[in-house]
Length: 72
Image (cartoon, rainbow, N blue to C red; front, side):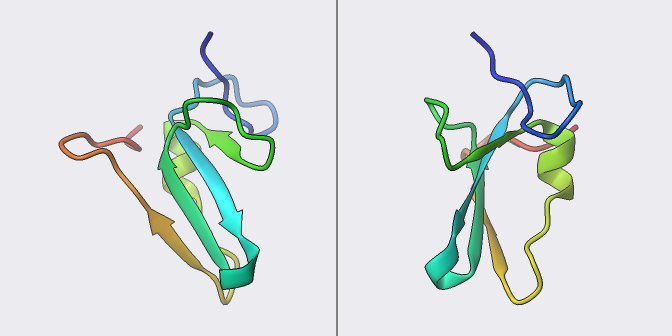
C-alpha cells in the first residue's frame, strides 16, 4: 500500500521521510522509510523539496545514490 504525503490536504504519494533530532537541533530528510514511523513525516516530492529547518537548526538531506529522490 502506498503512503500519502503527511501535509494536510495533499493527495500526492510520499517519497521521503522527515524526522527531527531535538537534542542536536537537526531535521533529517531522507528516502521514504520502509515502515510508517509514528514520529516521522512522510512527504511528497514537492513538499520534500520545499522543506526547510527551523531558525537555528540544520537540515540534513540524504539521497539514494544514483537516484534523484526529491524532484517534482
